[in-house]
Amino acid sequence: EAEARPAAGAAAREILKRVFGYDDFRGDQAAVIEQVAAGGDAVVLMPTGGGKSLCYQIPALLREGTGVVVSPLIALMQDQVDALLAVGVRAAYLNSTQDGIERARVENAYLAGELDLLYVAPERLASESTKRFLENGAVALFAIDEAHCVSQWGHDFRPDYLGLSELADRWPDIPRLALTATATDATHIEITERLKLGRAKHFVASFDRPNIQYRIEGKGEVRQQLLSLIRREHAGDAGIVYCLSRKTVEQTAQFLATNGVNALPYHAGLDAGLRSRTQSRFLREDGVVIVATIAFGMGIDKPDVRFVAHIDLPKSVEGYYQETGRAGRDGQPSTAWLAYGLQDVVQQRRMIEQSPGDLAHRRKLSSHLDAMLALCETVDCRRVNLLGYFGQASTPCGNCDTCLSPPEAWDGTIPAQKLLSTVVRLQRERNQKFGAGHLIDILRGKKTPRVDQYGHDELAVWGIGSDLSEQQWRGVVRQLLAKGLLAVNDDGFGTIVLAPASADVLSGALTVSMRVDTTTALTERSSSG
Ligand code: ADP
Ligand code: ZN
Image 1: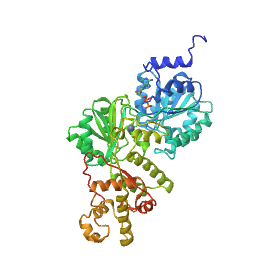
Image 2: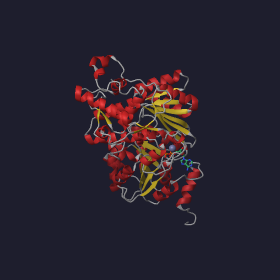
Image 3: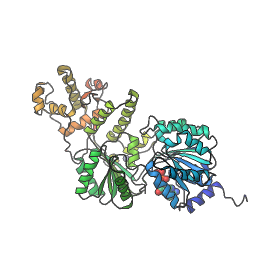
Image 4: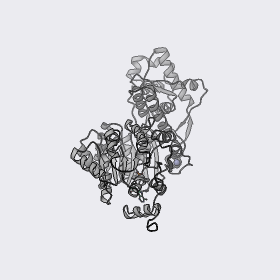
């Protein structure tokens, strides 16, 4: 009897082969499965595509009872369950999309011990009745997917996750694992504390996605830039283009479609049926480009997405990493391309200033944006910066824009002083504040109706910056904003004001090194007043 029973490792391998059809485990999978199958807790940090699902699916099959999977992605539960049913795993889900009959059917199956895996939305698990229901059956393990959602300082906090700490008290003997594809050191600690995983083993894989080439460039005619990226490097490839607003999604999809790209829009404002048809076309057809708000892509497992493009600045490095991580899950060379400009910085700073919530909340948003801007403005390897953000040290990668063509730096101290003096003079002498566009017009000595209206050609700073082009000036303003040496006012108009650190630049105590922008189409027009 004892001889006939294979060791946990061998049993896991047998399931890997027989049920899932794979020959070998990847990375930490075998070790995580061993830990959890033996009844231990685990915290698993693994990049997108690393294979987190098997880390709980196989222990759930090895252990007595049902593996309960907490996932915030209600829209995807159906897909996950379908995929499991297709390979003969008895899986089901409980969420708000079901009617009473369907729910009762799933509940009965669980109580009868007929389920290997049960997916549950976090808000469901927060309710006492669900917990009592689960107690009436046998739980094999709890898997908490997207565990970074428990972090209040993270980019994707979900209050329902806080209630999951109770699982430790209610089921002290049942193993629990927390899994995420994005966690800074601070978030990792928060996951461990809030989910009461003090006795867990930690499995931290490298977050590096070596096949993804990271590139960030200045924003000019951004749709044209995007089109030329697709035509030159990704003709006929599947890709995702992320935008911040629904309007930009619609316009960009339209633009690409009229230029021969098989592009479809996707955002939360579109009808649910259409969204689901769009999603399945993306999964099943070749070469579909989805233009989407961040609502798209969570948990979508399409291995051959060849490029992810951002035409608006993401709000955090975590978000950027997650979104770009949807490229190249198959390990083949893929592109993560981002275009951003002065307007992105002004707009996001303005949004933060006006966001509801307390000061602490605004500070959090602000520090997320600062980290994103630091990644954009770095003259060093993008990957080193990105991995460093997640607490992982690395060496220059040779596969990002800054490694492939190192950006030149220039001493921007004098232009910075000219700009700051203009802000100071307008404020002190005239008690006026303006947006970047008008400040640049003054510096370059450009006659406009507004200059005439305010008599700004009489200022001492009029025309002192005619040595730089408008585009160069926009780069200067953007980089000063990114470095916190200039600020966006909280008046809602995006006017430019001094930051506390501006004084050091004006006094000459601080020199400002800037990167030379490498933009393919330098035609961004000023739209701020
Ligand atoms: P994650 O949740 O970490 O993003 P998934 O669990 O969705 O990753 O796995 C990503 C892809 O890799 C899936 O298509 C999955 O079937 C495949 N995969 C996972 N583990 C293995 C393995 N050991 N061998 C081969 N393919 C695997
Ligand atoms: Zn690099």
